[in-house]
Image (cartoon, rainbow, N blue to C red):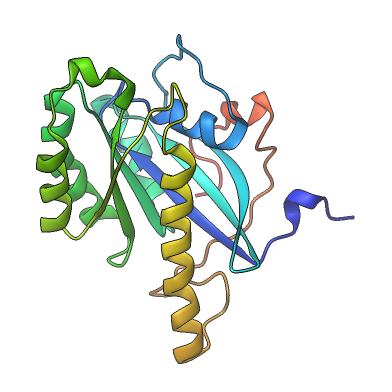
Length: 217
């Protein structure tokens, strides 16, 4: 018998990328479990969680992967770009270097992800406005120049976290829907034959955080 979490019309894989310490894991936990951990450790390898939302009366299930930002884990995480239809490129508004490195992360996406992946630039930790090092207008211009959407969030106080994930999922849904109308692609197919296969996970349980690094590749 299928549980409620198994009922969906679309399944989209989203990856969170960016430097270590910018708050990717807390964005994931805030959106999927409405939790925030001030003492969260750096992600080792990859962890993921899922959550379903409604878009145009369709159930869209997001399978969100949190890729480790530290250089020594790059070889592990590169395989996880495969099949991703969306990416949140996260930086810390209070640390300019994490914003500067967004360009390198963009290149990594270009090297490893589907050419049509939908990318959103996310300036996280907007609650640290008194320590702001990255002007909003500068980040917005960078996003526009590179064809990215842009938003500032705070996983700490929940500002714009829902909006960020809903917006990127809705954009992916619109793209997929338009392609279906134009060419009748299967619902879970995005492009270039990339199909997101459903995998069995317990998205709100602690054991989902302990996924072996090379599972489901």
